[in-house]
Image (cartoon, rainbow, N blue to C red; front, side, top):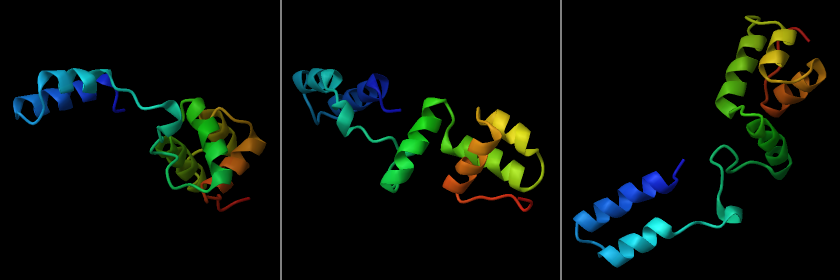
Length: 109
């Protein structure tokens, strides 16, 4: 994500291009966006009811991309429901809720 390292690169580039001076570069290095203003790209443009559920998945370390891959494997019959649930750190019942959240349902219900 765009943490201090990325900011450091931006301020160096701006300083070298003589767009900003050393004082401004230092200010940029120390600037932080308030937590409530940071938007996770995986949660942007989501319906309010979906944000909480996806935040829970992200909290488990499961990105939307990874969850999508797991659900796709399940819906195509590559893995069983039990294995998909295990990969998503969920139980069988929760797997169905996650699939519904992502708009995917296996051929065999």
